Amino acid sequence: MNVRFQKTSRGEVAIMPRREYEALVAKANEAEEDAGTARLVARGRSEIAAGAPLLPKEVVDRLARNENPVRALREWRDVTQLKLSSQTKLSQGYISDVETGRRKGAVAALRRIADALNVPLDLLVSS
Figure 1 (cartoon, rainbow, N blue to C red):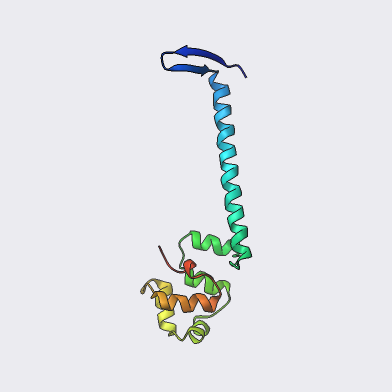
Figure 2 (figure 1 turned 90 degrees about the vertical axis):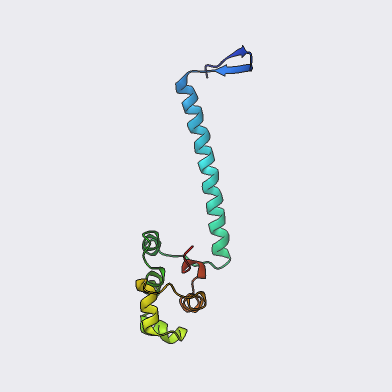
């Protein structure tokens, strides 16, 4: 590394070729990203160990596209609206309205749906 130091009125500064500086910054950013990734992986492993469901990529993609989570998760679990209605004691029409966005869905109802689909409530509740 080609670094020289120069004294200024503000103290000593390091002077180096731009290419070397940019490589140094890129390496630092890469290390920071690696640490962030490691934290996310550790958190995910911890959540899985605590019982969080593993969702297939296709379901995650649907949720990332802001598709209705009740519909995406219900279809992933291969449950019809009628069967979900029976399991939750909610009407099939209510479930349909939640899935199409005509109703937001009360938290208590979404809790029953989450329990029936065996998924965390926070996957169904919009923030």
